[in-house]
Length: 159
Image (cartoon, rainbow, N blue to C red):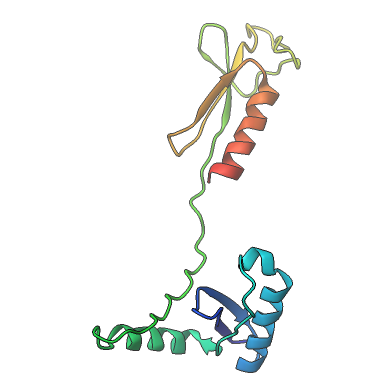
């Protein structure tokens, strides 16, 4: 099924990419999407204005043609094609457990929920630490669950 790009609004501020079998179906689908969620897309009471549906190639050609127009004329610039979704960088924030002397406690060492050792020879977990691969976030806390929750929150909101 071809992908169409449909400009929405009187001054073409909003652009909706739509998968549809025809240009008319793409216009109808874009109008349905925007009209159903009008408060998110619009902060005014202007009537909904749906532009012509274009394939990606037509959209790029029209944008290129509008950029070559005479600069002395007052024209409404054709908006840029919406950015293609690319895979976001995968950030990691692994949790590590540490002994009271600051040395890392190996992952094979088991502990109770309070950090007391279940593995012989282990002094116990004094704290857990997590550092994000973004280099801008880290946490150190005595509660392993607290560190895990903070990791999940950072990864899901900051990146």
